Image (tube, rainbow, N blue to C red):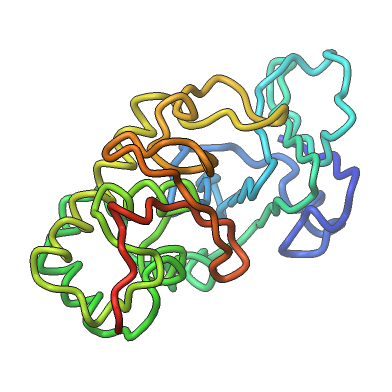
Length: 246
């Protein structure tokens, strides 16, 4: 393997020159995921990629025309490239001997067997935070993004500004189930294709509330509202998800 780096800041660690030299001759052994990170164990060290908002990975022939936003190119064997296209330049690539400093702080994976109701309840009780920002905190639950937080909260009938430490037992259980259900729905529909940088997904055709402000709630018919919570656009139904006094 070899690398071409067209935008140095795409490389999060080490510096881009060291990165390009260090990956030369290495072999990708596997492809894994941890939270929102793609983890590619090499014969030595780990190649870790975070796509962020607009990142896209594609395996293409090495002689294929280069795209405008292909900032990091990994040249594989037998005439193939792994190309990282990133229109907004938020994505990052890391080469690390030990991935623990990057991946260690991440919370549990919500679809793994160990993410039980009791585990989730214990973690929830440790915090006194608004639900939406807490769900987006990757140290609390790994891999949950803005779309899935909104969808899960609607299914659980919980307002995004509810306090995490003041939920009743049945509300905690609904949220635990809804998080897992929202992620499974997204996987079933290959994720969401929301603008020109994404492709192949159809989950956007099945949203309950996300990006549906002003449209009727699929459960009660009330108009869905949009607010900003923690600098993130947040969608909810005022009838299904009433805001309670804390």
